[in-house]
Structure formats: structure tokens, C-alpha cells
Length: 149
Image (cartoon, rainbow, N blue to C red):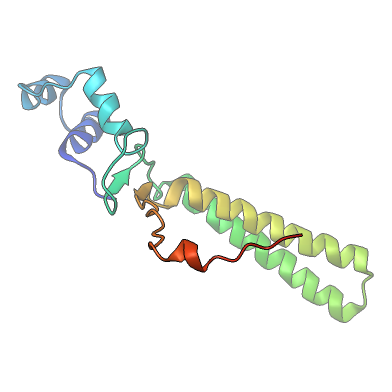
């Protein structure tokens, strides 16, 4: 995800590449109060927008963090382990309770990986689509049939 200039500047300040005074002089003349900030985030979430516009619903977190990458490596490892033991159990003649436990562990691991993917990796974008009103022609009510019970 591409970051804007302010986010890049804040990250450089956090890393120590740019001093706080230099960042303040770089942002000199930029006016952003809290109401403007909130309205920019809430635009499209609570306000009506035109159909087809792309709205960033909130500030989305980065999906390239080391914790997310380690979680996916952990998830793939456990998925391979549980699926391998399930395959072995099928050929070794294990009972259904043991096999269903292994299948359940595969599903739980994949669901956890899916939740992390949706929360931290997927971009937080919304494409706004509105339903159109249904059109009923002028002759249409004449062709209706009244069913009597």
C-alpha cells in the first residue's frame, strides 16, 4: 500500500532519520483540525457518495509486518502437519473420531489464517454501489392477475 507524504514523514521521525523540528518545518502551513480529519475518514462510511466511487473506510494497517508473515509461516506449517497426519491416518485405518479431529484442526488453522488475511492484508477499500429503483411500466398493473383463495 502506498503511503502519503505525511505518513512517510512520521515513519522517518519514528526511525530517527528526520528530527521532530525538521518535520515541523516541513509541515509548516498545513492546517488539519480534528473535525476535518474525522470527516475525511468518515466520508463514504456515514455520508452518501456517488455510485462507483472508491472509499477508504479507515486507516488500514500494513500487511507486510513481520508478525503477519510469521503467522502465515506458522499456519502453513501446522496445516501441512495436520493434513499429513490426516493422510497417514486414512491409510493406517484410524477411526473417524481421530480423523475428524485432524480435519477440524486443518479447518481451524485455515480459518485463523483467513481472518488474519482479511484483517491485516486485504486493503480496506469499499466500492460504493447503490440499488436502482425498480421500474414498473404503465401497462404492467393491467396484466396482473388477482388470485382468489
